[in-house]
Each structure stands twice: as structure tokens, then as C-alpha cells.
Length: 154
Image (cartoon, rainbow, N blue to C red; front, side, top):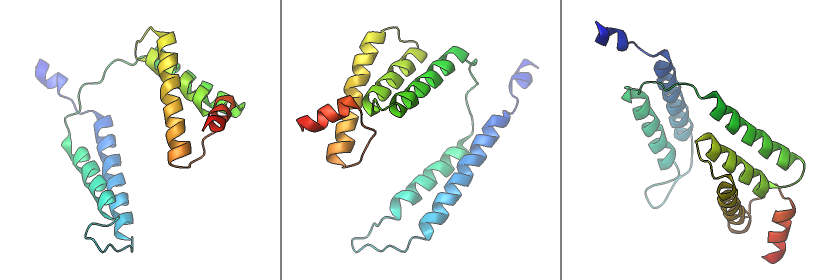
């Protein structure tokens, strides 16, 4: 009897599977409407189709693991990090500082206790990401004092 009580269907699993199936259908339909051609065989339609197939397979997989207990403190830390990032960018301090704070708060939410180390790691990663987007991809990210300093150096 204990086995039967534990083996109940989780409605969230059906919702997730349904959403994955819907997203896969939308991606496949949108990719099928592309009128791009390729002279070398595989064209731009290939990747959306691969993603749609992968999402459909994930939706059909089933067997979700048992849910863990809700950790409200961790969720609040991550939401606090997001709010801090939005505020920092909104007040003009830029992407790097905002992303650094988000990284440190997310690490704390996952149980890390080395805040100073996480701030340094977040600063390095955010600076690398800013450099990649700004200099290599020529995409603009919200600028603040650090971004202006980096732009003057390079």
C-alpha cells in the first residue's frame, strides 16, 4: 500500500510536459515558415528544428524526480539579487556592478558563505562578459563607471 500512495501523478509534471510540447510545436512551425535557402546543405532552419525535437523529447520523457522542500530564503536571496541588479543598472552604475551583485547573491542562495570571494568571481565574470559583448560582438550593455573605464582602456 505504501508504494501506491507514493506513486501519485504530479500535476506540475504534466504542465511542464505540455508547455515543452507547445514550445516545440511553435518553434517547429516558425522554422518551417523560414524561406531561407542554403547552398551548402544545412541552412538556418536546422538549429530551430533540432531545438524543437529536443524539447519534444524532454516533454515526452516523464519520470520527474520528487520535489524538494521549498527554500524561501534562497528564493528571496535570488530575487534580492535581481532587484539589486535592476536598481544598480537603473541608477546608472552599469552592467558589471549589477551582475556582480546578482552572482554573489545567487551563490549565497545556493549555500556559499564566501561573500567576498563570490564578489570577486562575479566581478571577473561580469567584466569578461561585458568585454565579450561590447568588444567582440559590438552589442551595447548598460554602462556605468567601470564600463566607461574599460572602454577608455580598449
